[in-house]
Length: 563
Figure 1 (tube, rainbow, N blue to C red):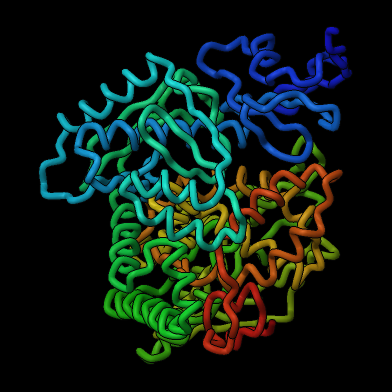
Figure 2: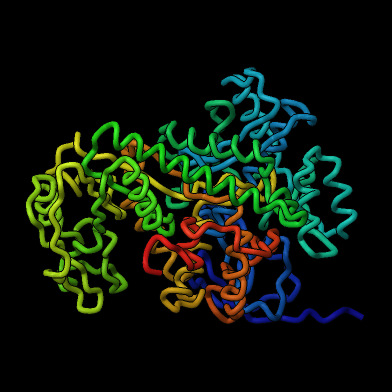
């Protein structure tokens, strides 16, 4: 007797856009349905969302799926799926070129790509080596080799990963708290990835491998233009900051999450906190030394959301005081034009992130007055009324005083176009996270900042996770337009990341994220972030964290300003 096939109606979307409603057989692999909507040869469907989670296309259609949303590289989650596929192919090709006993590491983002290293590095990596890796990758892609998914008992998963010469993954699985693990295989190589993979390597249409510094730059298209590689431009200053951070984490023997967890287990985490905070203080003091020696009158601080700009400005002010230099702190937010004159976006939101929202003329006029020792009535912006309020902060600077300016446009020369360049010192700050989940899974700087913002928004503004996650894409778009294009204008970059911070933020972020329901549009992102936090053990005692730590700006208890 033939088994009756159950037909179910499903709404089909592509990158969030409604396509049609279809009647489909329950149990049909999503990859078969996806073929009907894969109409772009260089921007193929990579994964699917069913309402609750992001899945591989090997998943079958189920009745309880709310809808099927097919994702390409133009979608955030599709793009990350493609990045994981490219990483897997690179890792395999590198092992096959340099030997399976070598150590292949995916370090961090750089130059609109991923910076990777192969150890041991002995000066033999050259452009010819990059070409060999590139050619081997292309062979794997041309053969459209599959990415096979296996959910294995934990002991069995450890056994297959143990044969791959990467102990960081075995140590990580110990802290997952589950009796099974999902692993992937491409050819002979088994690996563990934080997130789904496409069906096969043939989905990779555009890529490159470039020899750079002591490793390779794995290049891929941008999400907004997935059919071509972006223009290459090497940011050596950013590379040096990341390298310094990686070298330092290796020095204190905490390159990955598992090593951090061990310090929490054995009680040595206090030393990690103390050394990390000491490094921050040392770096801030060095910046203050440079400002004092160069006799800079204006210090401009810029960085993306949740970088710790306010705390950094206060700590820099203290270090300048050590040199006998008093600092007057200004925020560009106080120079917003009256709200009625601020342009709105297509959703009706005020575009406060644009430079046009700042009264640049008044800002420059008052800066020059302060530099000339004149009395200035500095405005305070009333965000409720949407207007600048005068008469609350009347200030006059002495000749040896410095102005510290904090705001997202600090590195944009147009903000201070009427001020002499020789008077300005520009600082870019961001938590440039170097701690990895393991050797092949990095923690992005954007994710580190998002955890900070979730905690601070909830604590200081009463926002739930849904509100913060909903606004985050617009925040990121504003950063791409107003901050990142100017980061190379900085005289110095300060890395605000602390290797232990996610072990602290977990306590605050986890309950906030757990309140996001499956019916909420933000559930997928909340689930992804909760999975990332699951790798971390919680810090058992926060008393070791100094009251002037940049982290206190987010969790509360800072001594630097009124909290």
